[in-house]
Length: 199
Image (cartoon, rainbow, N blue to C red; front, top):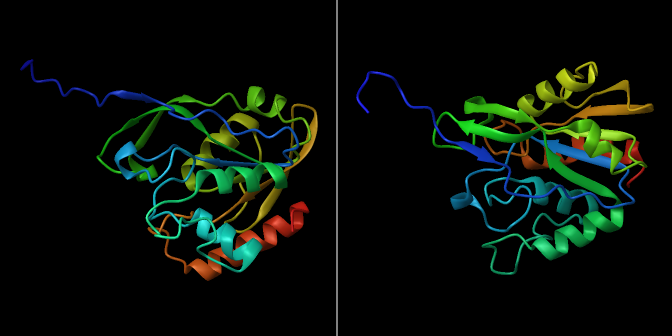
């Protein structure tokens, strides 16, 4: 069509199901997965350039490569999901569908078309009393739905939702675009995980 209107990028539905172990005490929420071409596994934080699983390796095992296959070319989904299920850590994102306004994984260029139904999500993990957001977009969407006060990066705030007294932790992004050394990010996550009682 050449009627002078710009066509919008397609709407992408979330490609993963929520990871919700029955024993989950902590729910970690990002914004939305990167494009599939950037995945090294079929799970959350799949991009090799994202350091979430290196952070977890450092915090729990003092080994940044703990959740990588030996060749270093992909994360080990089975090892990660087994570990999270054992610890009681749930994962999903604050957007169920988005438009990518640019051809990258940057939150800045994500338009949230359908936010995740956080009430329905939390109803499935009744033991959960703590939520982590891992970026500004996720924090904005979460606080918009729950009226939770936005904590500073590395901090927490108290809120009530679904009849529960809960804590919201705002963690530094695990993306390498966020200007903080891996070891420093791991230390912030270590403090949060200790506060939640998972360390």
